[in-house]
Image 1 (cartoon, one colour):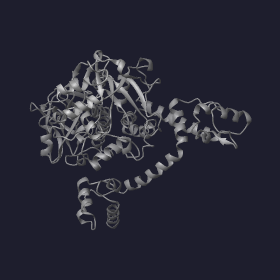
Image 2 (spheres, one colour):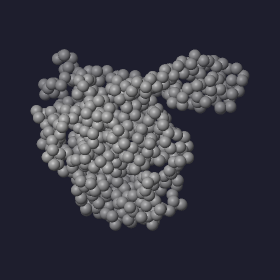
Image 3 (tube, rainbow, N blue to C red):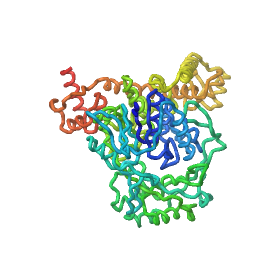
Image 4 (cartoon, rainbow, N blue to C red):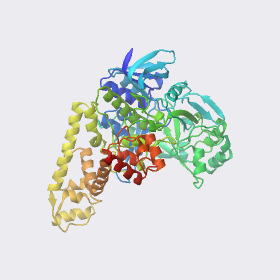
Length: 617
């Protein structure tokens, strides 16, 4: 049996990769070690968050599935950072751990051109540095024109609690023992990384009177631009806030050497931006307490997830730690926290399409590339599935730029800078984050989704109408003026805002910080959707900043247009710094823009490189 594309792994990256390739008409096989773990959420029961929530919106804009599925599984929805500017606002949903994978599996099973096989891939079949397929644990060989690896945390996975090490996947499943050896034999650099998870507590054993209730927003939110509401605000499930105590910190300090990390039992490098609780206590010793959230995992069982309490302490120490927390003095631990180590590749061995540089038509996505998080994985999986499909069709790849999407920032960081610890997407990583907002993901990316073939004609027409309405509304506001008449100024003072001295367009009036489109409705009827109104208001209020960001992005794009030949010999370029020469050889950037972002390559090196390219053009 031969397929066009084989996807190895059924996590969030694998689901998006398989769906995109199948929806683009390619005969696709998804191979997973356990069908019951497809789209599993082994760690936190949430989708989204700062930057990551915008990635989910981008996935939906391109035609992916995560946003739609998160909407179906939402237990609670929140827009984060509403008191700050639109550049850092993002959605975060509590997601039901039963509904989310169930709905995703239903989608996979109903997708044409897609088959699912329960098996363990142990070897890659490669000939003349080109992928030919995979070999399964039982020796069966399955051929394909392209393969996408989305193996998550399963490559040589080891679960750690204190001094105990057990070869296992996140839920005690069988780990992938030999696939990373196959990658190593092919020339891939293998890294050892680590992540972790906290305890799950029986809801009925928690004293909620000692906690602070955290409700969802009173208005509806959706990740998907389909805007289908599955749960009304009044039906949302609450989370609860607590803090670590002085006793918690004393227990951790006293038993620090018994943790896997501080006891020297960990080989892999853990996430810098999502550290274990023992790491927080050590690194932030000036902090008297750390906030923790008690989050429901599902409507179908009573497990509560302690967000922020990840640990690799022995179970008996975890008992002491949990019982030192307010409201959890008599808590029943249903599942203990643990750390998990796994193999990953050096992401600098990838092209910006997520195709590997070592084996043609082999793509990788998700935690195998050194990232952390469901959202980062799904974004990569979608791009890998799209690009594998486009390559088989002989079409140009989809490479998202840093000023176009957080997915573009993520992939560029991976292939240009590489990772030392599990990569987590942050708003601070995006230099054009005012352009990469939660509200405008479709305006940035839906055209790409349509051109690729993942957005159908009907949805694209709806999107085109939205763009036309935004343009129409902006022109209407710019062409409608108000003057300093008595009745107008009397209304303006009630807002309150400064009365007019001269005439002004409604568009310029909207630029005042205290003025909203609700105030504008006093002067003119506005028959537009909430999303269209929001877009125009943001464009008006941040017009100057947006123009400045676009101008800076244009400079970056001019460098992206300057291509570097694939066969360039950096050893022949005189006066390049030795570190720059070594880094350029390693990464092999495709543009001057990418070269300028490589750590260790300085502006002087870029100038020398550009002069060399001009002379040898």
